[in-house]
Image (cartoon, rainbow, N blue to C red; front, side):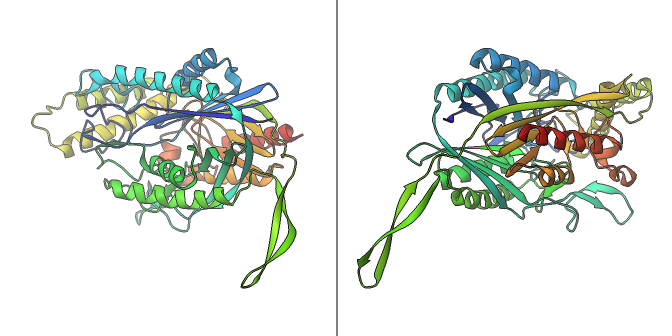
Length: 467
């Protein structure tokens, strides 16, 4: 029989830690906490097979760091690394993991001294949440399905001058599907829920100076209040998706977006029935109106076999300028940024230099990842829970990719998400390269042919797993 356990630990950093993600930021350190950051773990067991899904409130972790943490998780829980998924909610209002060496920054800038202790706290929280999840396994029933939420819209907006920028683009391609999974104990109480949805947590942007789990944090909090149990969020194919209200410093907007998604998810969750049953007419009770009474006949539980499969796909690399050119540009913009006198420089000057340093740093990082390679290996993972499959990869996928995998899947419920087990940049659609924009010109190392290869491999993986 299926068993389920869940655990959660706080990993919120202190006020004063660097808030360095946004190139156009107006403040270098966080001045308050909006929604705390957490590590949440779900352990599943059936017939000797265990799977661990851990979700953490960060933008992302380098793939090497993810691999190391998954190794530590395996050591603590005894679960094979191949059966452990480390997912990121992708909030852009959390510290960057390696803030001292990225985005043009350096270890001696304000608040950087707080980073090592926060990283240690985060790893301890991840391990503790996972151990709790494994230690609290109990018999459970399971159901899954789909809902619908209108929050997300396409985000590749073309300006009047023809430039593609990140902004809500009504009418563009989007995926409004909410995927929900619910795990109840044998008395019908919800132990845990999984909510999968794809839209960028960039409601709070460069104007924000608060640490926040953003709309996913607000969503999880509200789902738990409405349905009970512990809610985990799986970030979907958000590469070209954004909430219809976004890019603000107003935390109330993040709460509003999260609460709306939560209401839609909770509606779908409460419509599920993990208990397999049918209602049978029993008798009539005479009242003011005759009442037809029914009894609930419990049927055998639906099988919820667990299985994990993965495949590595080789994705072609796009061309870059010479590494020496990119290194020189990154060094120059970094030196310019670090050379600013922060006592007299205003926020506009800092933001101007920093966005150029950040872009140079991103481009160099992408080029180094693919340097000397014609293709880069990327692992696609699929977790089967009965007739449900969760597909993931360490990429920022576009909505069309996820919709195509779902459409081709033989499973009753299929969810595809990115931001899992590492951070390897965007996987744009082929036609997007001709349009330009951040996702194709800067934050990816793959070429136009890559998405079709990824899509084909993911669909085959899912179909093979179904048998």
